Length: 280
Image (cartoon, rainbow, N blue to C red; front, side, top):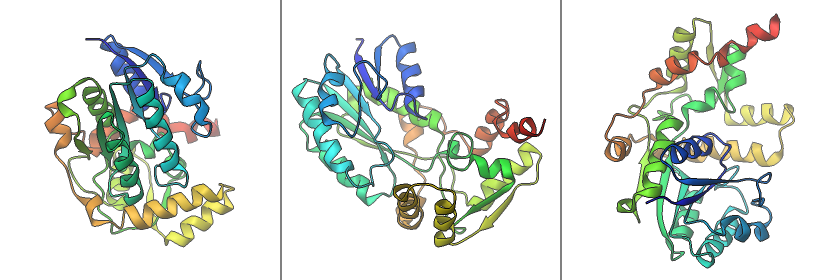
């Protein structure tokens, strides 16, 4: 059976991959974004209904994070609109070890909609498509929490899991936890990247306050400074976030992508060679 699916955040790390996966399977996909037709804007609840109209299912990614103020209200408004428009099911991307995100999960679970929750650990792609790319290009990765052991997860795995549970109702009501196959510290992942890329890249442990001050100095908004402080202190400091799950293998029937595999495949894109391009 083919479905009409709204992918909110369909141009983001996981969203665009989910769009590709669903399209390849023959489903009709609409990207929910401010530039979409009709537009979808998390800050304008009146856009929810028109974007959901005619859809059977939806993948929900809240930007920038379910922990930020206003997320709970927006998720509640979205689920109400989805129920009104007659959606069959929603899948929410959540954060592993985030207490604030779990409140949003409960809103979805109690909405009256069929649902699956996908809790993700920290993304491998933060080092190639996200906040830490510039650190890799500069050769110095200055981050807090040097002792945190993180089961970094690949967004390809997240997207494959989301695509599967969106269309497979046997996962209704479940919470799927997606992690990589092993726990690693920032120092360990930086060492792997340095070895594979063939460049001198150093990990420099700093305090959370030093990291936040650096973000402020870079001109980032206070909301982002708060969010990253929260993610480092509350999430990476949470013992639950340092547990490896086998849900990727359970859902997909294959091993989760290892961090080294991620680095090897990302090398082919040339994203970590940008500093060479900038110098020429």
